[in-house]
Length: 190
Image 1 (tube, helix red, strand yellow):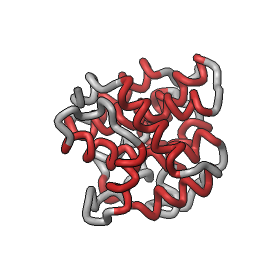
Image 2 (cartoon, helix red, strand yellow):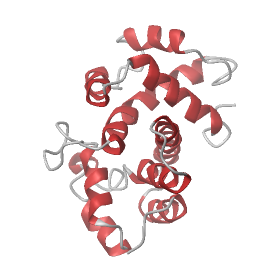
Image 3 (cartoon, rainbow, N blue to C red):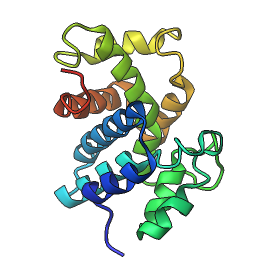
Image 4 (cartoon, rainbow, N blue to C red):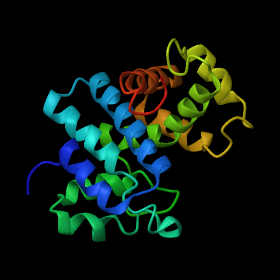
C-alpha cells in the first residue's frame, strides 16, 4: 500500500460519485485542506495527501446518504487505501453520523472543520459578482453569523472544529478562502 495521492483520490472518487455538486464539494474541501496543510507547515508530499483526503471524504455519500461514513471502508479497502486514511476520512463524521473515530490529528480536525465551512464560503462566493476574488474574512464572518444564510451548513460543527484546532475562526476562514481562491476556476467561482 502506498500513500494516498490526490491523483489516486480523484480516480477512486470518480468510480463512486457522479453528481456534479458532490464533485465540486470534494474539490472545495480538497482546496481548503491544502491551505490548512500550508498553515501547519507540512511538506509538499504531505500537502498532496491532505488534499487527497479532502477530495475523498464523501466517497460513500452519493450511494449511502443515510449511512454516510459507514461504507467508507467497504469502498476504500479494495482500492488499497491504508487503514489510517480510512479512519481519517471516517473521523469527519464524528458526533454527526458515526462515533467510530474522534478527530485527533491536525489533519482530522481540519477535515472536520472545513467540510461544513467550505459550504458557507461557496454560498457567499456565489452571491458576489466577483465570486472568490477579494473575499474578506470580515465579510465572511458576517455571513457566518447569519443563521439563515447557507442554513444547511452546521455552524455548531464548524465552531467545534475551531475549538478542536485551537484556532481563531478568522484564521481557519482565511485558510478556506485562500485555498478555494487558488482553485477558483475548478470550483466554477471565477
